[in-house]
Image (cartoon, rainbow, N blue to C red; front, side):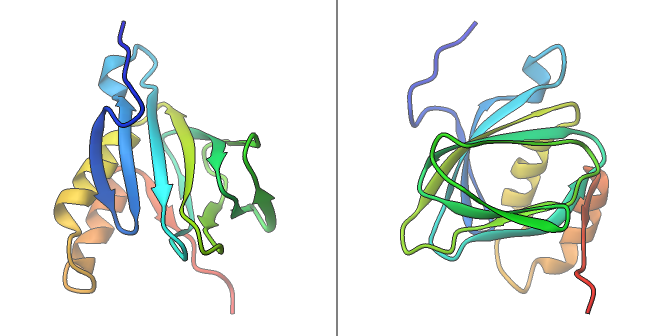
Amino acid sequence: MSVLRSQEGQIVQVLSDRVCIKLKSTHSPNSMAVVTVDVPPDGFVPPHTHTQEEESYYMLEGSMVMQLGSEEFTIEPGDFVHVPAGTIHGYRNNSDQPIRFLAWTIGGSIDEFFIEMSTKIREIPKDLPKMPEILEKYGVKMVIPPE
């Protein structure tokens, strides 16, 4: 049992996003991980899939455009999104204000992915060659849009 206050948890910087790990997958019998994510203006995560976990989002502050499969949705405070494993998804903060959402996964170890990304991908573009190995290790597959 645990209680974490608003800014408590393990904080890591993953590319443009500030991720606060509230529950590690190793501390849950079903490998659930829970994080809050702060995304700056123009911050984004490109379209990708997960092979190891399903993911859910609950929007807390601001709004973002989220790609789910081949569709885009505007996600606003109070909106909930569930992304089954293998579903293409990504998001972008198109506003001039930071946004915040709660995200959780079942299965896999997305929290360990965030930690490894934050320690090994520190300088862009210098560290980008390390990314494919990390993505493969955690079952994250980037999706290149058709031309």
